Length: 249
Image (cartoon, rainbow, N blue to C red; front, side, top):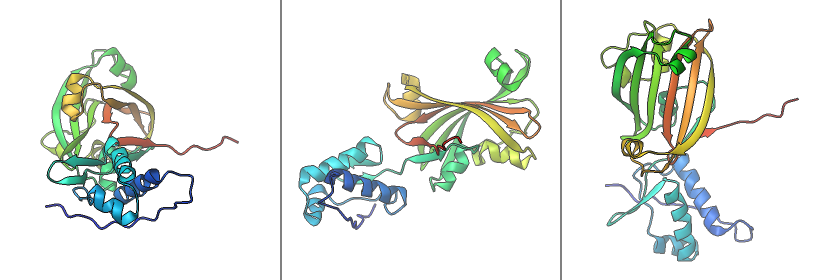
């Protein structure tokens, strides 16, 4: 059974920042930094409000903001429980598997398809092959703590990697490339968003119409060869891209 976690917060009542927001930010930080592990139980609203000297509506509003973000869930007969932290992926040439593992999210993979098929015009243009030429197509569901995080579709040149057996379930695609001696150098990437279809929502455990992040990426090795074209869907409630922006001199 999940344990109720002792929580310590410092609230500045003289600050113009609303108390509920201060509380929600500190709760979110505790989740992101591992102080509140997945499955941890929070005290009920009445106890938490009394201990912090806050009104119950203030505490309820703070908790609801994290429920809306997908970090907490209210379970009947159990109480408010930590689901998991949102994965914040740096915008760099890394794999989702590595990012989840780095974030302590226990990644797992379910392979939906692993086959060879003719390249569409779009895939052919990305990989630099003739339209209709054979390409490897892999489709996977990436999970963290047993919960779906992303639907991954990748096309690769034939002969690039040995993807037989269970290798795709055991590790990430980029690790397999590196193990095969492929040096990843750069990528072109486009990030967007759209609403989930009924099929996508069912696959990713989201309601139809829920926001999904989209990403398309063409990855190149150090010789300039295109080694992968990926088209991925991420749950916006569980996943975010993290940017660092610099002023151009």
